[in-house]
Image (tube, rainbow, N blue to C red; front, side, top):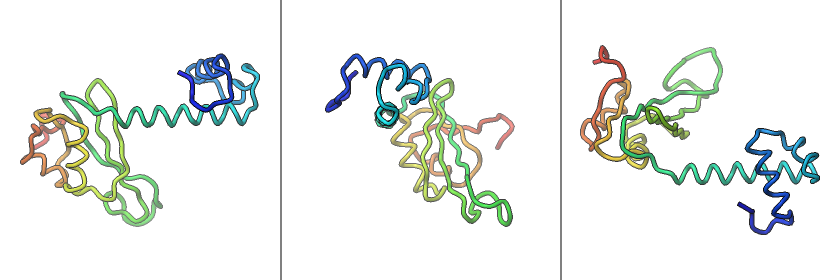
Length: 153
């Protein structure tokens, strides 16, 4: 895989990809391949962007999924959990035994969550969630709802 419009030879590009996959730092890869550190760092950055685009285009398929939201950032003082000031809500979908998809969301309401679930999970899949009211929309959709633990009702 060579990048278009690159001044690097295909050989140097392939060697940089090998170092990227091996987890070598851009600084070390630059020394080993014989390119400028900024060139290697830029190339590694572009590889990450390509991976992110490819991952976002891959839809999840049929199976068992777990969905949940979490809140990050903010200060520890004051209100905690849902609605806490300064916290960023993040929604996640985990395919059991597979990949994880996360997305920053404006809120954890059903009207926000359902389109994401519909885009990532095929109908008739089993969706495990906690009892948060935002997931109540799944009960009237094409998904089979289940709680993650048999004792949760």
